[in-house]
Figure (tube, each protein chain N blue to C red):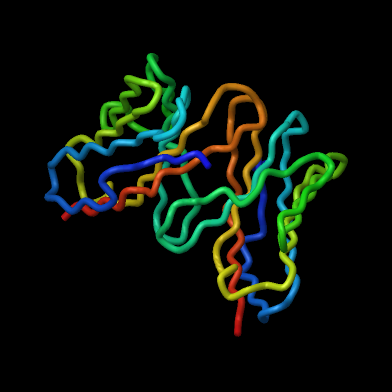
Length: 108
Length: 117
């Protein structure tokens, strides 16, 4: 079983829509979780860390469900500039495990 | 935020050439740096983990004699692709951890696009 599983998409949504991505992880000892975005032919950029109580940054909300071992990212009021690949990262101990990424395209 | 600089951003060279890529943490000390490669439309693939002052730990299937990693200081790690061939053409990205302890994210360099002719 993969350490991290992520739906690759693609997700094609209209501007202004709300979209959510999930990412499941297998190691229950995982302590740290992150969401990155990667634009085409660019490096991943940290979008937000995911805290146990859930956290919000503007239009972005990240949540952690330890019981079901998944993290989620919710994007409200999608903008064209949100089009990118979103990577979840799980950090048990000293390892970092990346999801394969979910492709999002926001359509005008 | 933490800044990681990677140089060069683009390399085009002939088969058989060795190529050196530098990864620098500009405003923090990085005890651990990671090297990844990424093929088009594929996910990041971890090549090796580089700890300052010790030998790098390579992932299975990555040749340590082919991809030489040196992490000589807390702000610099280098990856040298020796005797590069066209199949080594890829996007190479480094990342750095700002400090030890849990909960710290990786910060990525800009990446190096390597093309071997």
